Image 1 (cartoon, rainbow, N blue to C red):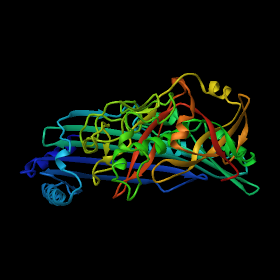
Image 2 (cartoon, rainbow, N blue to C red; image 1 turned 120 degrees about the horizontal axis):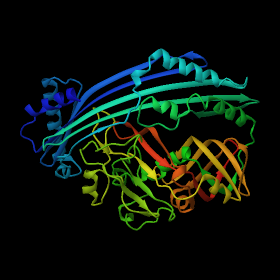
Image 3 (cartoon, helix red, strand yellow; image 1 turned 90 degrees about the horizontal axis):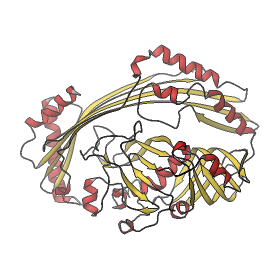
Image 4 (spheres, rainbow, N blue to C red; image 1 turned 45 degrees about the vertical axis):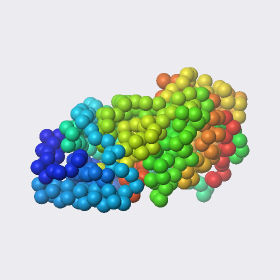
Length: 480
């Protein structure tokens, strides 16, 4: 971090004569290893380092980014940002004097028990070969894959008002996939950590059951090609945390993004069915629906001490007992809309400015176990692990497909069904929430490819949820 601070402080000598400035220096390193069908794939290793300068001058705000971190490079970035601010002052849609000014000083460092570098590359490949070989349990398995990925992000934000936020994130992600084919039917099952990314080190591999789950993953792929199609019709639905992740992401997280509600994203990522007047009174779901923005969960993907504007990140309720309380909006959007929000102005790297993004959006646990939820279902389906998704431009109507389904009859789990799916409309769907399992069933997961913005940005988003029971849902099958 000392080197990043040294680079950031170069701006002080050139950032003169403006009302407010920030500089955010980001260094990222990424490595991925994979084995497919017992053959090592080409390893990927990447690094990037640069700085984003933000300038506020009068009513204008502008940005300038550079990977040239010399004094001359920082001067050019500052000049670009100042020129853009002058243009915005004449043509912008809002007065940049609303831009938050940060004096916040803090540090954050992800907890890592076993560093990525402590295990040699040869040993990592041995682990991958072992996991991939364990997927080979049946001649009907036609493709097998195992992978390991590591990402380290170090960031320093310095502001002209004395703010200084240094953050260090570290991620290790692993996963398995087995594809089975028989009689014209092809099914893929993933596991071993594939859909449960988080912050940490190599200890995450063991926690994910990377090697131990291989045979189960392959066996489920084979079982799915033999299983009947999921029946169609209105039934009760239990979603495991693996699918709740995307349900929360698409039909709660995105609709509550305040820049989307303000119309900023409609040209690319769409708008929202949520309108500003809904906050404080709109019934988003049943009384069991409690959703929080929580940047303090250890190991969750987007845990942090502050957002990229330097706003302190604190847990808050977005939805409480089914009632909509606040949107996902950083301080700038909050001031534009006259609404409270969260510390979620985030950028994907040094060459992008912060925009309103999800961070850790969690559905808080209720009471009981998964078995208790199943016992309450007379005729339904349990679904696990997202496979496909479709949602309209206002993030209201949706349709999801899952990898695996299990019928529920008279309070008991029955056989597997393949190609399970369901559709709904957000308001009716969440109001039909009739069961939320307790803390012992809560799983912390996340999404690593949340895309938004022009130019595009892809960020990591955390989601935690227990299994949930929904009544009277339109269930799809037959490969639809």
